[in-house]
Length: 332
Ligand SMILES: [Zn+2]
Image (cartoon, rainbow, N blue to C red):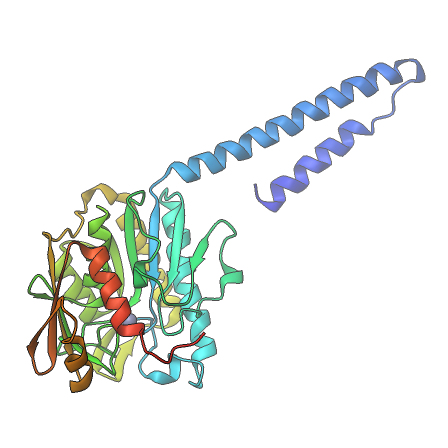
């Protein structure tokens, strides 16, 4: 119920309750008013229950939000607490998410879970989100950028995503860690973060339905995942440069593509890998590869790469999270 409806209802209630009545009928009228008011409140309650039941019964969505693929992002200045534009870009990140949520809801989506999946995992301005949205924040988390996904979801949306470290193009193209990782393969296929996360969702039978980011990741994701909706909010002209939409124009494209995706949510196939899953990881530095090679389940395949075979994508994700988060000196 919006504010206007609420004001009108209370005005009707007030005029109904405070009409002047002759003395001899007052007791009867007081009782009548009581029952009428109770009925009115019950009806109001019933209509709001209907609304929330309808909302919960629509497609359940998971939205994973990264930052490199937002409109306007080109360098580290937008991407972390020490960048001079970071605080403004947290707002733009939140605005792109809000546009997506609103469009999804308008197209009939039900419950929505959001994962803040960039940097420290604490970028989104959560007080600006609708109060029935919940947010996964910070790290570590076993399923990384899609932690919280399970088979109860109907679709996954990736916002603000970027191309993989293997892509020749793409603003800030990397996979999980630009400082340390130079390649990630699943069952022999090079994947982006979108591909890796799509495979986790695929383990639970949930398809990716839409992605936003630069033209490089939208193309890369569609090549791997098929005909998902793609919202291009900028065009990569280099690793640290792009021709970009304004934040406001980007939210319009995101609304349009989200609507299209939710309206044809039954068209998409989960990205399900055959099991066991072979995970190949190429690292920039020699020493972590040498040490990982000590583990009995890990095969060192080249000077800079290892292979791990896991029963399924949940196991692979836990292994990957361990490698990228563990250090003997982590505290507390
Ligand atoms: Zn990322």
